[in-house]
Amino acid sequence: MQARRRFLGGLGLGLAGRLSGADWPQFLGPGRDGRAPDDAGLIGEFADGEAKVLWTTSCGAGFAGPVMSGGAVLLFHREGELSVVESWDAQTGKRRWKQTWGCSYRDDFGFDDGPRSSPTVAGGVVYCYSADGVLTALDEKDGSVRWTRDMVSETGSEKGFFGRCSAPLVSGGLVLLSPGGKGAAAAAFDVKTGELRWKALDHEAGYASPVLLPGKGAERVVFFTREGVAVLDAMTGKAGKLEPFRARMEASVNAASPVVCGPGRFFTSACYDTGAALWEAGEGNELKAVWREKERLDCHYATPVLCGDVLVGFHGRQEEGQELRAVAVADGAVRWAVPLAAGHVVVCGRRLVILTEKGELILAVMDAAKAPGLKERVSVVRGGHRAPPALAGGLLAVRDKSRLVCVDLRAGK
Image (cartoon, rainbow, N blue to C red; front, side):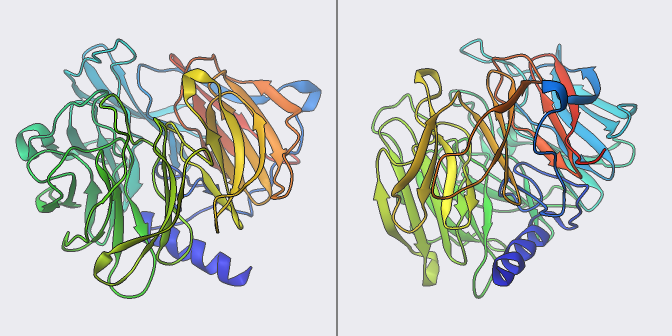
């Protein structure tokens, strides 16, 4: 247990700079792994069958989830022809600042014209990557623009099926991103100036976000692109061989982000008859599949969470009905499965905090051997939305198509 805690803490510090029980500063949280700090005491049941809502405010379009940093909730969304980033006080919902700039993205399928990527807060800066390919750095205190870069002109980033979707990863003075185009399925930019430092992998970007891979030697980063998975040197962009990992059909996506499963190992998964795999990165960033199977934990868009020796996440296509499953990291064996609408899982200690596309919030206790009871469930937002939540200091921020809601899950409050 001690080694496990040291590993998680080191990973979080490398990804987002500071760690705090009151921060969820990026996509998937402080460690970019769907885990909230264990010291955040949460309620086990809803009083009178209702959630305690601290505040609610309106918001615009987008699948980008909220983040929490420095006592604030931040959201990247869209209003009309404008990209919008807003910051609200986490306790009161009072707006601290609002920043806007033009946005031209149009969804070809009519789903949503807003941003897909949650912002990343690191070193007093908020980094946002929009669906039309604009990377923007804002001051965390007042929202003023520090710099901006257009990936369409900079790297030839292509729209793809659903626009750009790569949550910025900040590490070692670089913003790591998957813009795609002109040898830039992976790229790194200077945190202070936005200057392009390196680019690599000559194929399309996917919809997954990069993660750091702990281990011996130089810092490494995993990119899960449209074509497959590769491990790169984070400072230079030098890449090992890309391992193909995608569906044979053209109309498919790689959307769930890689999940680190210990030093040098990580998990990837996709639907469309692709399956899941546990990878091990060796010298020269070459990859070996420890196991690779279908119908174990085939993730459509939501990233699973590592809980001890199992991965917990949603299996199956979102529109065809899903199951919440736990599979063994060692071999992918299914430990348990329970039918549940598509959504996201956050882990805090032994607690599972689940938000479904139906707008339901579910509290459960994790058990690797058997399926959790899902009786503690309430509606907190409207259904039909898939933005991930943020959990920090016992406060949960969630959004739907038009509202941002802050729920108090603190025990004894």
